[in-house]
Image (tube, rainbow, N blue to C red):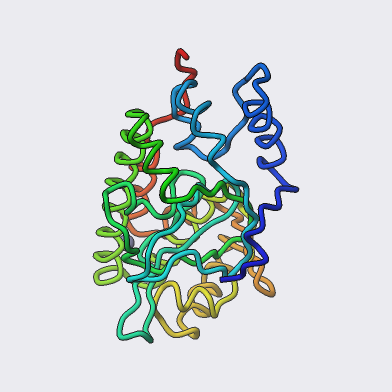
Length: 268
Ligand SMILES: [Zn+2]
């Protein structure tokens, strides 16, 4: 893991907004709801969020950071704010295939919520950005004390299981071009941006295919003016066109994410 990236820097995005509020809680100052882009945290009732925020440490993550390894203890859980994390299954210590994407709609390390201590997958940052990190002990205490936190994270765990299962079927039954379209749309939804950096080499690893296959599919999308791809920078030009090119899995993914608990201003 890139340790330098986990030193609690919080210069960008939401972290800069969240930190003063956390300090305000510690100092006993008047507390107002901070803006939090992680959908699960934002869905918590006000009182639960107020109690949970002080145990969350802002971290900046960079492309390639490995947060969890299969079979290794889960020491931290990460709530993405602006970063994107791939969950990857590792076969025979050599072959790797992405099974799920986690952005601000989710949490990385949800197995802890379900009582497991070891990670079943490798978690790798594929879009650099910020996250809020909590230790295993602090999370377990918060789960014990706050039923809403437990409920929200368990709901997400079920959604994630659905995504992983769907991805298994997608990899087996759907064509590469449709899978790539699904993947680009899922990334867009989680980053909340139509522009992101992604090399063909990384995409080929994520989708478990040869690089030439990714190159052909991306070229096809460019000819149809669905995307623009240049030197590792992808821009989605035609969202509806890309949705039409994707397999049916994307619509299910999007519906499942929309069904997660939405932010609501609950009573303290
Ligand atoms: Zn599919």
